Image 1 (cartoon, rainbow, N blue to C red):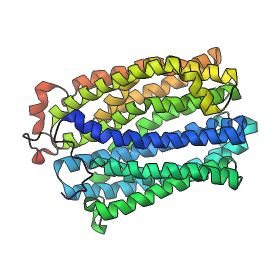
Image 2: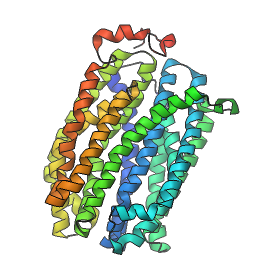
Image 3: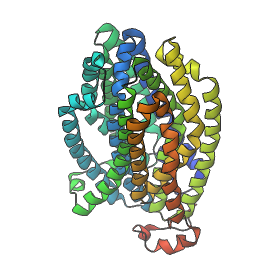
Image 4: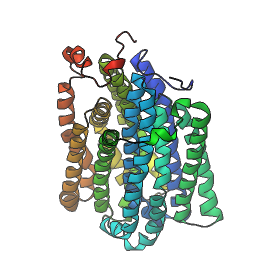
Length: 467
């Protein structure tokens, strides 16, 4: 198979080294993505004020819900691409990529149109304060229609990562991040577009990254060059793609829908709490980034090695990332107890003591339980990689139910304290089925690896001597 020099074969070599080589560019790319999200937040707060910042924060979880679904959908599609790359089936790989494009945009068309039609009732259900409703509506409407661009980038980036290239998406994300910062100031300060300016800046920078990815694929990745014949999608291919794509998309959606419900409870607690939580979640995203990157990297790693029949390498990789993640969680615990107030003050550009207090408290409590979150993220992404689609959805469903209960019961009784304790309690419930089913999975059980080889759908391409 002809691939670019930047592509990485994850079925050969020392697992921990390969995972880090693959994960570091993904981490840096996501870090830049979060950074320009932080810039949006800081510019809006500093230039347009706390009311505008609260308007953006009150609907940001809806944006996260949609982007999470489309990233999960494209990542699920790319897991199958990774398997075909691992098994050496180039034609099926191309057909899988073509099918992902068709099904991805068909799904996006239905979902985006539906959300756009009902956007105002959705904001009402989110309890967006009346004084912030118009700003929130103008901001989120642009981002909803821009989801087609978001999907296009995720399809490009996750397909490249599926064949082992995590460097190209990094380079173009950095370019997009810089462009986003510049455009924020242009649209907000120069053209006086308010919160709509921040949304336009995000979409234009994403579109730039899509164009750059497509140009790079055209000139550097012949394995991803598609012809009309590859777009003939059979029923079996469509079902297989949707099984994997919707599994990861729904997993992310259930998690983020729970957060959406939780946000409706937060929006009733006043502007100070909304701003504090918005800032705290930005810090949470940064500190949790290595964990989420290790998880998404393991989906690709397990997919390639599952396609190659290398179950021993899957077990080795899982052990390595759990150890790496545990070390990082220890560092985060120390950071949460020491620098949280400074970070909240910096992000919000505010000296409001109530904002700083609640944001700091959220981080100090929730970051104390990040180790449990680590197991959740790693295990459910690994499961997607080796074909267990049901258990991750079950775990995510537990999270959704838990957030519904906390929103309608504990938040009403205990206010923001109910929000603070929501995730730690739910994490412990979520991790139980993941650990149980991982230990039962034939891929993980050492005594059954050989027995499975003959049943693997990619068994015709196994090579037990690969290292």
